[in-house]
Image (cartoon, rainbow, N blue to C red; front, top):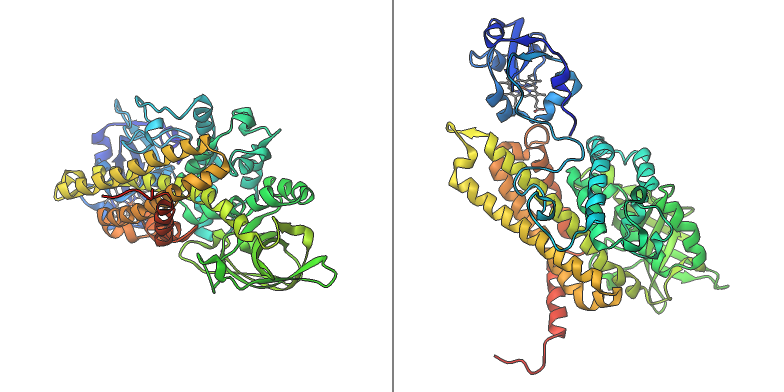
Length: 524
Ligand code: HEM
């Protein structure tokens, strides 16, 4: 994503006849979208080989069509390649535009309806639209380049990105509406803390999901999104006053440490223990945790522990007895997914989150919001894949015709569009309900709906991933080039389907919730 810098490279003007004279090894020009490139020296270095550039339909010719069937437009935006442009054709102007930072996509279904020109929505007000506009620019400019780099090199986000987010209080907004926003200037004052609602939060979640870097998306403080709420909602005032500002400002990192090799969705089966010292002033925590997002670099761990009378949540600080090791998963190590061991870790009892032995409640109270956040991101990630497929199907030619002219491809696109549109519409409805309900009402009335939408979002995402690979063919399983976002999505969508509860567990939860509401007198 960048501005169209190639077209400003040179103002030299050529005719097609002039370009055609440069058609041999050592003197080789080509035309791409009315821009003239001198590839004489580059040809030997061309990743696709020299031979293809010497083809009589390419050398000295207009190679626009063939170029775009083999390369993403971003290739021409890379400085190393952009500088091959020596001018452009007289009386012709480029047709293909680069994606401009911060702008909306004009590809059909590339944006949800509320962001598509000519459509309406009852949910989004000016403050949502203003936030979306400013935040998209922020994501394109600051987060996207870092995401692409880190996803590749496996390192965690650059601190400058987190600092920039903190300066606009984006980290605080990711925790949703609530008292924690009081007195903060949100996105340079675009939204007032008291008007910030779940639709604003949806905007933040969905814009971040556009970066096409699933691992980095989780690496960028997903641990805070799930690990800090128990501190905010159940921590003592002293604990909150110390920990929350450190985390919001990006100076310290936090993660949620519940799942273990012994138990995942089955919270009651956890084995990590916390026992009180004789003087009652400390907990001694022992055990292991697995698949902990951001655990590798976390300073704080919101840990689910077995205690004498049940289950208690305790905030453990990195220190003696805490070891974290990176787990290699199928997304990149930029996430900081950890295996954690707690070996006789001494924690002040003041770090207990919520009442002793009421830890299940502490955890459950967070699950709905966490799953809703995941649904927001997953649905937006799915839409980005629909856009990729739509573009590819239009620009790719097979058997002399665009791919989109094949009924089987249109059929796949139809199913993809229907899935993402229905998921987004359902999500907006649930979000609207959330804006009208207290947290308690949400737990009573929306736990099932949220479980279902999370299940539907990730199940439909996996179908879309499979269809997208079929549309892209070999490119859909290749990490670089045309299909790189498809390959990435196909590899990482499985994460969405497991985090926050596996699909079957969520589906079952939703039905069990509904059974509880079943009227006793209902009969066929
Ligand atoms: C300024 C002109 C060009 C530049 C800068 C360029 C650059 C590249 C780059 C960076 C790749 C690696 C794959 C990727 O990152 O997408 C590539 C692959 C390739 N290029 Fe080019 N290219 C140019 C023109 C052409 C033209 C005109 C053809 C016409 C046949 C061509 C044919 C290929 C082929 C066949 C591949 C391999 C594609 C694959 O593995 O799927 N390139 N090119």
